[in-house]
Length: 156
Image 1 (spheres, rainbow, N blue to C red):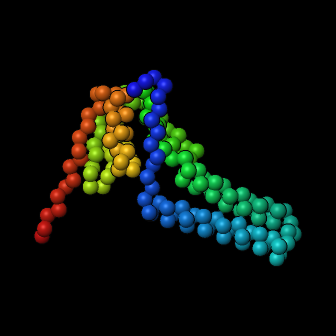
Image 2 (image 1 turned 135 degrees about the vertical axis):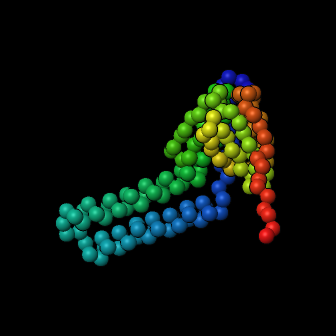
Image 3 (image 1 turned 90 degrees about the vertical axis):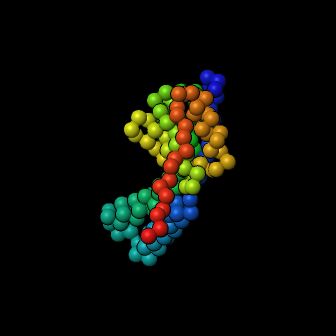
């Protein structure tokens, strides 16, 4: 891998995460609507009302912005020196040289990335899995690669 080349892989969210994000949108929208209705219906009569309603609206807007950022800008990035995870505004770097092993579970379509005893489980689009593994191994050829053994279910 060239020195400045960055490979970017979009995070795959499952139906549960999409449903949870939709629920957050609905609850925050309801919070904003209730605050506006209360301000219009009951008015603002004191310092408590001046603080309470705009604060609730700002908190709801902040939650919506975080969820939008999470859905739009969630990636795994591989550079010649780092493995970077981005979840919206949150960015974490792991030195590629410290990664020791990658295991892939074909059944669940998840990757386990080990840094010694510590590990992270990630999910990518299945068609990007091989390219992601190749990018990590190009940055650090010493990373072991194996298929993860799934325990067999015994019929009782």
